[in-house]
Length: 78
Image 1 (tube, rainbow, N blue to C red):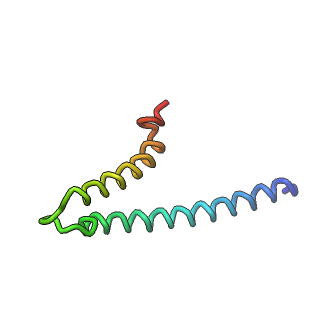
Image 2 (cartoon, rainbow, N blue to C red):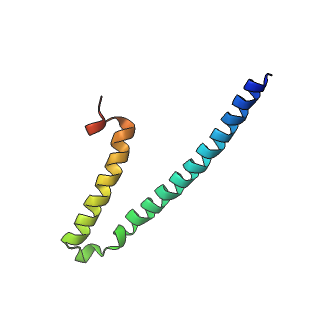
Image 3 (cartoon, one colour):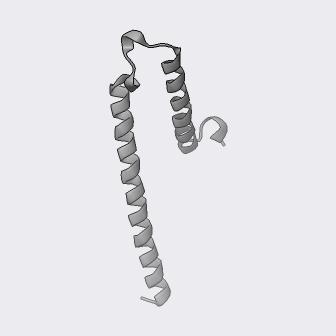
């Protein structure tokens, strides 16, 4: 193995380690989102007002940016 190949292999290992750490962070955030949803985002379903709906709409728009970018929909469509 040449020095260049060794550096490339080490770089790939470091990249994978960083990727897996970021994926674990993503998975933890996703679990938090699932818990938030199960808890009705802290709102009492029997007493929801427009403010709670507006907050959820804002959060949905931010999540939609992520999913649209990944799936190349909306403004990210080819």
